[in-house]
Length: 110
Length: 117
View 1 (tube, rainbow over the protein chains, first blue to last red):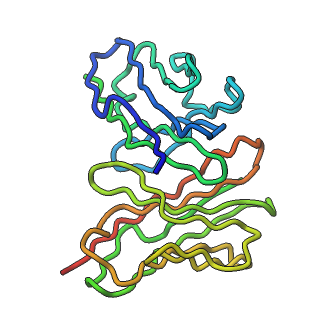
View 2: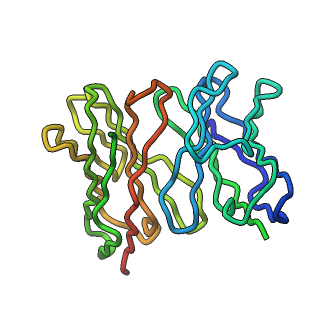
């Protein structure tokens, strides 16, 4: 069964460092997303990506965030200069009609 | 504005019994989709079931069914014959056009389900 794959599963980084979270969406899906879940809270939309460009972004997705689909299969989220409050679970998702999520990357900023 | 509300922060159910997790939504769109996801303690987000707003029949997937009441704007998840492995957080989510057509999901706050042996 096709699935969304995220790497790494856990990442610990120092405040101010750059991190790149990687995702391989389901191959025939056209819509890609990043969501964030701070511990114990609900899942929040960050950004959607369609036809090789951002189609929508939330208020959370400020200038320190960027997304790329560099090679037609991977979909990455970059956080340029991490802050303590960026600590969260980050989910990649892809969809046609149904939306499937990866297993998440737990990011801890220390 | 689009909104999803899950009013039950926590629920308990006895193993082998059925349980209903509540979800109400608010949208002005006629075309929308409703999703339920399971999040076990390991953290992944597992798709369970989907209901489209124009689907005439309630969705079912194995032990999961969705009690869709369009007029009341509710989309409750029913889990039959609960198993210990059903203990998890459950999220209701909605996709509608809203202000854009990006297909993003809006999530409720989640319900923690604990199945007692």
